[in-house]
Length: 203
Image 1 (cartoon, rainbow, N blue to C red):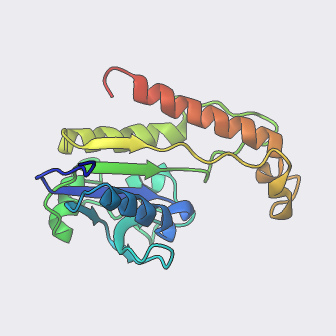
Image 2: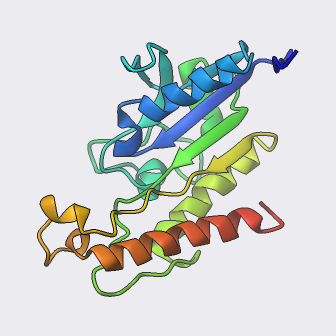
């Protein structure tokens, strides 16, 4: 039989920004899991949707405009991170998140972040852990590893913009998002750093 099975139930947490907010890729992913024979996967999260394209109900964390820092310290003063903690010294906690929402644990995490905040206007931005964006990403992943050391974490690359100025319909040319070539290079640099990060021995 080609059916893949596993006797252990898996709690899957998907995290992202506007590309995740409608639940589409989360639902498509779970649909594919189940098509392979996995009936033991549960999505967890405080957002719950059933996209019409799959009719598969899923839970996740996905909010338009959010970036790594939003999940560490909150989106703004009035919109806290779903992982916010008043007792953890870092201000956020995955174990508290699970306890508060009735989730037993986190087994797998898929993260699609983030076009928000990467810029790229004429500077072809490069990334490292000292960079504000990835310093928050490292805090986030390190805390997750600390609290759920057996959880499998998958970082997804961000989609590249059109090389034919497809963003020109939506953004002014003098804004960072209007500089298509710089944005393409910046997105490629972002994805390259994500790959390098995942290949580090400690990760």
